[in-house]
Image 1 (spheres, one colour):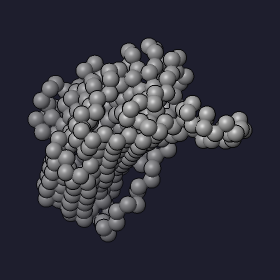
Image 2 (tube, rainbow, N blue to C red):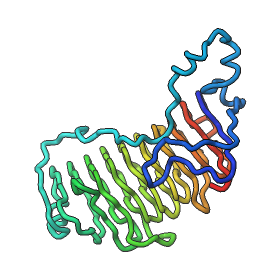
Image 3 (cartoon, rainbow, N blue to C red):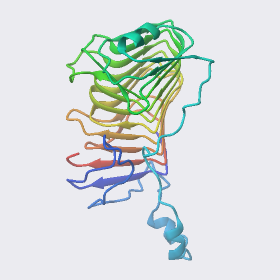
Image 4 (cartoon, rainbow, N blue to C red):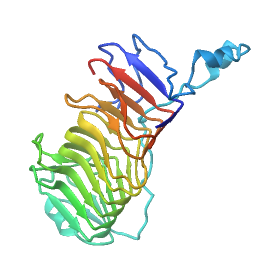
Length: 313
């Protein structure tokens, strides 16, 4: 594991933190017992007493001008609405029935213009150039019955965008009830401003390539917030993981999975957090009630991250 510019905090019982479903991102409450640790694996702390002693001429005014480091997801979403353009035919649908008539077509952008919850499972296979965009005023909700595969499964597809959706099962599932979204052998995926909830798994990627997840919340997940197997190029930017059995599970990674400006809160009753595969974490906030475990044997890289162990989280 390579770690640069990492701030490790030990925090007393009762401290609640910024990452959750309330969008109060990156506004940490005061820690009662806060220690900056210059450990054997972190040669450069964000701010430590050694750096101050080496520059005694540093004035207090200059210290005040130094901006505080930024960790975790930001309250303002990153705008990625124009990242793809495939000359899609725009179709506005006004009911779930109209939605299912249009969703299997290639080269289509579906804009959902109704308030009804979509309760049927959606299965896409060999579809190309499809965008599904939720309501303009609020997210469109998929709340399906527990399924052995997923609320939405997308297999052997190319150029798929999901935006402004809530995707999950209508009740908290039991083990083995499926993922909220299941991808298999799919390329060029964008997920933006979604909420993934009430799944056995949140999102499952298997053998997928060029998949980017932005501004998305993962919560109330029984097992894994994201389960990623044999990925080639997958990234998460400005995403919030909380109330997941295990926020991130990586298996047989080909290229490092990237996490940038993410909040990863391990506060489920059976949660822990350990990294065993190739991955890169940049400007992330990681909070756990048990010691963080790096079991990657040098394959994980942490850049400018804050890791907090919080008793009673």
